[in-house]
Length: 89
Length: 230
Image (cartoon, each protein chain N blue to C red):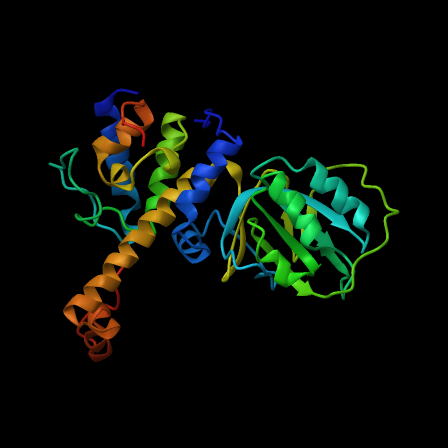
């Protein structure tokens, strides 16, 4: 999956689930490097759903053992993980 | 889409996750991923001073008989957690210092006994976490009931403990996770842990109480919402 399509998929997911998750819907001008937590788009209780969505959308398993936590805080980091371009720890 | 990438279950990978788990507890995992965590409601306690344990589970059932436990010990792969369900209560001791020494030599990730262990003073020196629901000095002596199928799915406390599921234990209790969700759940649990730690530091640094942070007064006055989400 291309990077821009991935961003759209995740933003769409966050928009659809914001009400149920008690989070804020993403702004139209969200930047790939924005911290999803700081913007209130993801919280600790909704993060698992976002990760599972990413896994099921891309078919790639996300594994904490291979990445720094901060990687999961931005759209760019998430894409780099599933694309295999994120540096592994 | 199906998640097709196979999660490694080799000892090195298990050990890497275990090191990460050193600072993430069952409470964070359960809070962060309630849809994927299955509580295993047994009154199991750490018995040798090693309060956290995790790994793919290798289950076996027995009936106060040492033979299935010995067979399972022989077959449990390195890094895995041997789970022994003794159907007899009160249980005779299924695991002691010699059994656990073998587990250490075999580099097991841990042992959970739904039943009794013994030799507690000697278990402390053995570097494999061991949890149990009971303790007794009375050893199981029977070795007559050969297990014909190992590992085996075991039904305990209304939960199926299936081979390969991941078992986590700490002083708060035990929980199970499907293997295919371990990475995602750990990521979520670790994030929750980090944010909880930041919250506690903020409370200590700013001298704020939980009532302050949750806006409890505003909520009780009907002028605001309650709570925060880490």
